[in-house]
Amino acid sequence: MAARLPSWAWVTGLTAGATAVVVALAVQADHGPRPIAAAVAKPSASASSGAHGPATPKTPAAPALPDDSGTGRRIVYSLSGKRVWLVDATGKPTRTFTVWPGTVSPQPGRYSVTVRTQSLRGSDGVEIEHVVYFTKAQGVNIAFSNALDGSSPPPADGKKLGGIRLHKEDGAALWSFGDQGTSVTVVK
Image 1 (cartoon, helix red, strand yellow):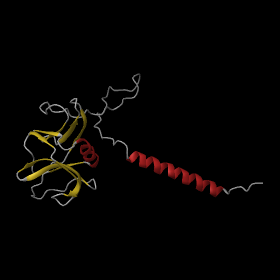
Image 2 (spheres, rainbow, N blue to C red; image 1 turned 90 degrees about the horizontal axis):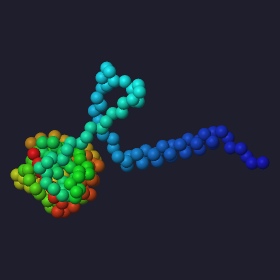
Image 3 (tube, rainbow, N blue to C red; image 1 turned 180 degrees about the vertical axis):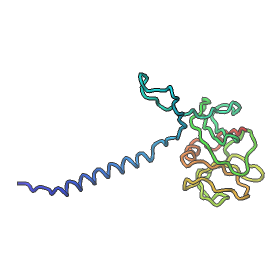
Image 4 (tube, rainbow, N blue to C red; image 1 turned 120 degrees about the vertical axis):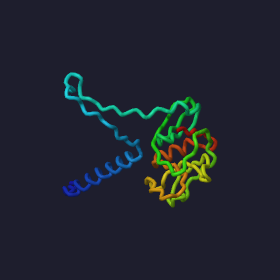
């Protein structure tokens, strides 16, 4: 006759298995797409979910690519919108995201990615990665980058800074997209 396992052994085994599944799902979710908070309009007094079913909130559309941003595969940076678009060869934006501009901005115009550096310490003292340089303004190098730890940049305290900081995921996407020679269009 086989020996029976005590109930505590079963409970311990099931708990360990469930914990492993939860950890695996959490790691998988951490590498997935990030949800974007959307403003949801409040229903009016006449709104009901009766015959039409429950109302589903719509995600707001991303801002449109500026009309004067050129053609073909390119990176588009809007100074006033503090936003970047990655545009494929057909002229369709494949990704757009907000940025934190430095204290020195490039002039509107057309540029190209000149140098890429995997990581370094920024002129503000923050460790940065995915550094994509495309011009100079007021003697300062202008480049896209993201903080290595994913943080937003601290206040500039009067320094001339040309870093255009991105969220970590956006920095990785721009790094993959923006090879040396890739067009960069800066618009107002």
